[in-house]
Image 1: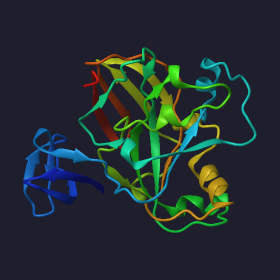
Image 2: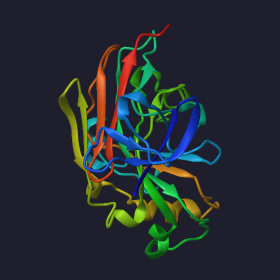
Image 3: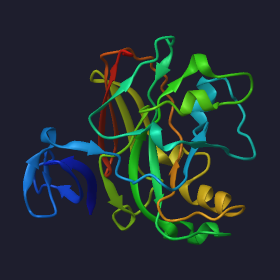
Length: 253
């Protein structure tokens, strides 16, 4: 099942599902079907839990950034909830940046508490999957620490959604194709099979020193394909069986 969180008719609504046979239709919990363009899409996970994100978790992306050798431990960082934006949102382009680029990422949403979980049982703690576009601004990277807080915690710079797809509907999260298009041009084309650490590996690692709780999100990294964008560009991140996440960049106000 695909579920979404939208604002429509003056209130937030849950349980919206994709209309049968029409990807541009959103069917609300009361049975009403509305056009996708008439909905104000919200990030499909409510704020409150922890947002984890991975840096350099795809080999080819590491290589294109000059990191030839994989580290023994994952590069994990945390994100604030104000970074999240919904499908069809706009993201401000920093006035002092010229090297901003999109990053398509598979997101695992935790469904039940996990502490000291073994790899073989890890996926049983995932409730759903969604898509993130975790924009990076390369000018803001400082010294050896990648990424730093200023790069990955900008308001509205992590579109999320549009759908939460039940984990039961995804047989293998390591067998999904990812693509990013900027104004229709493919700039990222990868596969989750190329992750250095899989979804299960990451849950095992994180739960080894802390408790993961329902609603926690793990952004699992991005494949190769650094493409600098500009205000006015339309960016579409797509993961097969999960959906298409659309976003547009706007000049700072």
